Amino acid sequence: DVTDEEIEAAAKAAALHDTIIAFPEGYDTLVGEKGVTLSGGQKQRVALARTLLKNPRVLILDDATSAVDTETESQIREALTELMQGRTTFLIAHRIQSVMIADLILVMDKGRIIERGTHDELMALGGVYRQVFEMQAQIELELEEELSDVGI
View 1 (tube, rainbow, N blue to C red):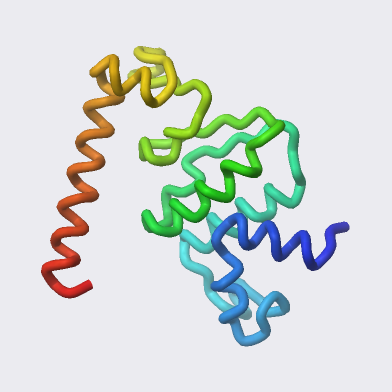
View 2 (spheres, helix red, strand yellow):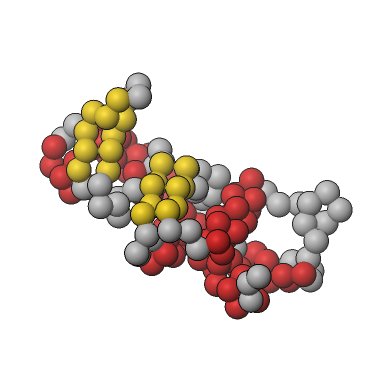
């Protein structure tokens, strides 16, 4: 059993609290077929919150933020930084922003480790990791410029 405070803390860590309190019945709202329909990103954040409530010693997050926007991903990443303290965490991700905080990053290609190190070490290496980082940063910049151009 968990307390309401623990549920709320997990929801905040998963960047879900504000969404939940906007529901008609808040934390008591029925979700699913007979209730409020959740988006893919919301379902992903519910799964993350439920995992955090279990407080596992080993945490495996496989593309845990793939269905959320970059702002929500940033909020989740901040919360995870604290939650990862004192436990072994495996972050599996395609977005480099998601793994930059890791103590050790393994870059894989076709099932093989091709690079390993911290974010700074891999950036200095100038290999695949850096190329992907630069491509993702460029795409993010272009998207921000396009959104700015249309007033969003």
